[in-house]
Length: 136
Image (tube, rainbow, N blue to C red):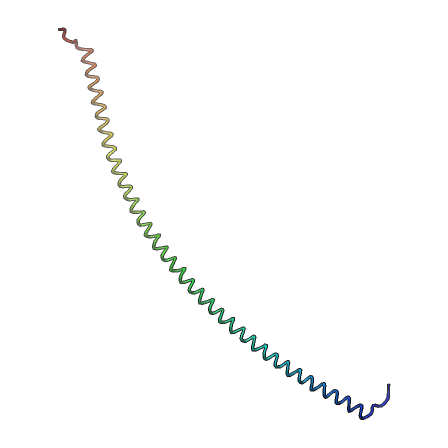
């Protein structure tokens, strides 16, 4: 194996190496093109992602506004209902006070009637027991 290589063999080896270098250069160019294409695609995807994030942020802002509007309306309605409820409670309380006053008056009249009836009954019994009936 220690044979000296001939010039034609060396030339063939050199041509093969140069062919490989051309092939490597072509593959390197293809790789550069592929890297550039991939980078461009990533940049496009990044832009799309940023646009989607902006849209999501816009939707979130709209939702936040709507939620705040709904909360404000609910707060107004709750306050309105509380006011109406307070008014109704006041009306019911005043009505109950009026009924209590009327009931007290009715109770007083009933007791007066019962006491008068008792006194009349006792007077009639006393008359019958203590005084004779005139004989005819």
